[in-house]
Amino acid sequence: MLTKSYLAKPGEVEQKWYLVDASDKVVGKLATEIAMILMGKHRPTYTPHVDTGEYVVVVNAEKVVLTGRKWEKKEYTHYTGYTGLRRETAGQRLEKNPTEVLSEAVRRMLPKNKLAVRMLEKLKVYAGAEHPHQAQNPQPKDLGV
Image: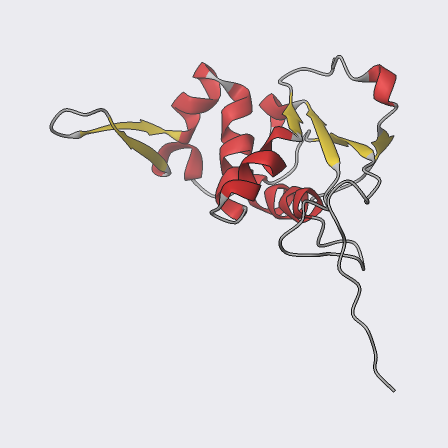
């Protein structure tokens, strides 16, 4: 008797919407759980080559927390095309664009392939408590505890 493995097919999986409040949550712990939901690893029907994840709406991203002295010590660098790199600390990045700290942490935890681009499109991060996704009726989910 053969046992058959289930492999999800694109468009076959129903995708839910979750609402996450990021107030006073540690960035790394919150980002790992969001990345798991975006990939679909929380489901028993997870299939690596199919996007089986859910939509995640994050509010209050400006109130996230980094432990220790990471606001001053943690540096983000990027190449400009000229000699030398651009550097900014996590505190500077939070002031400039509060949603980028969390969304960048989630992006780096996703797989490095074309499917990750589609997964990242399902992440909606907002600095304040308001979001325009009321029509999707996102279910509140407590993450990063």
